[in-house]
Image (tube, rainbow, N blue to C red; front, side, top):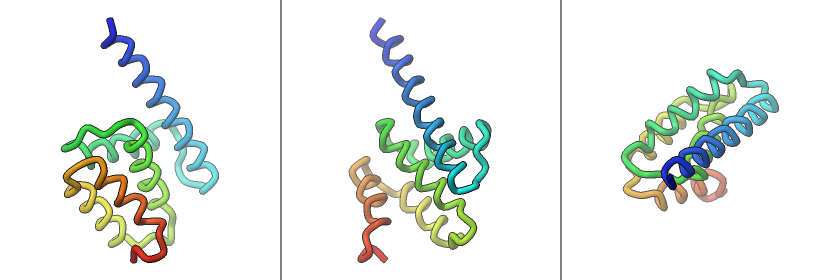
Length: 107
C-alpha cells in the first residue's frame, strides 16, 4: 500500500512541476502546451537517469532547460550543461552545477 501512496504523491509532484513549467514558459513566451512541457521534463529525466534525483532536483533541471530555450541562448552553453549533467556523479553535484549557473563568478 505505501508504494501506491508514493506513486500518487509522485504523480501530484509531477503534475505540479509541469504546471509551474507551463506558467514560466508562458511568461517567457515559449511553447507551453502539455506535450512541450512533458518533453522538457522527459529530457531532464534522461539527462540525470544515471542518478536517482528527487522531484525538486528534477524540476530544477527542467527549469534550466526551459530557460535555455530562450532565443539568445548560446547552443554551446546548452550542450555544455547537458554534458555536465550526464557526468555528475551524484545529486549534490547536480545541485552545485545548477547553483553555479546563477553565480557571477561561475563563468
